[in-house]
Image (cartoon, rainbow, N blue to C red):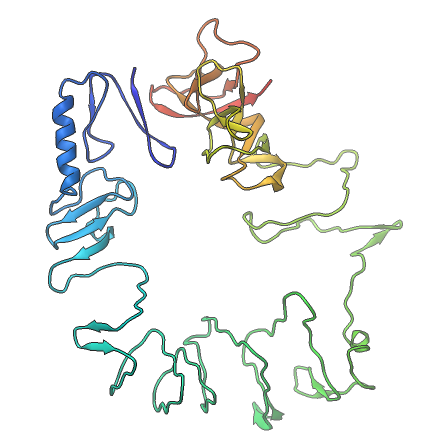
Length: 414
């Protein structure tokens, strides 16, 4: 019986037929059942792993997370993704050669740091220095310099910039702007916006309050004067919030727009209320399976055949011709029920009807009935095997290889 090799994340790496050795899926030789060179293959694999595949070039067919000792640079490196053979793409962990580079992420030093000609201790004095983060706890006089991050009590400057008009910055605290100068010909201007919009957003009581003053609002810069006194109790009369209907026809609220969008198909939205499609109306979906979220005992990727059981509600189907098959993990549900139960890692969408991709092993002809093959997969039913209880669905396409793959099928679980 062929060996099926499964990676740590649950995906199938390869299937090794009896009496053969696989040398194309990893840098190691993976012997199948009854392979004649079994012992030599294991010894070779062990040697390569002990030396971390020491060579001047990355090992062939690497897997994500694999170590390689680069003899060109005397450096230990980590493979960032399956099949990566570009040496410069591997992350460098250590380097013993002069001038070698280490590509760690963030390093926190709690004591003194000495690196060549740079020493950072309790005090640092230098004519010039570059720091990613600089904190001044007492006082400092900084002239003709650029400050990117600092805690400063009083700052006197004529320009504060993030470095570009599209680079975001943040002001935190309660700030007061005081100014009576002239900007673009308008006297008494405190703040002038050259481009962009002034946006007020967020929860709570955000808004604009004008306290006993004129509010310059028109495009010409002319002041607009409102009668009365602004205060918290009457500001709604001056800046009302509209909460009515978009339209009323025959006593009912009507929205006649043709598109309602959250802005992207990955951005969630919500509809509140009880809604009914009128006679002749339809709700169309891009995809073609009906799915519901069920709690799984581990993460399962799309196409996995599941059954009721395990430590949670569902688990990957364990045996061939199982009568307990319950559905297939979907990533393209046309309609998803129980959507708020969890996410794909804990409550995967299980297609219980409709068109969906199914993991299968072996050849499949269009129209053949699919039954479980164990290990979360399906296969084509042979003559006399299909029953009303073990059928997963029917294939909608041909699969001409014996390898593990997927077919689009119409599933219906009894």
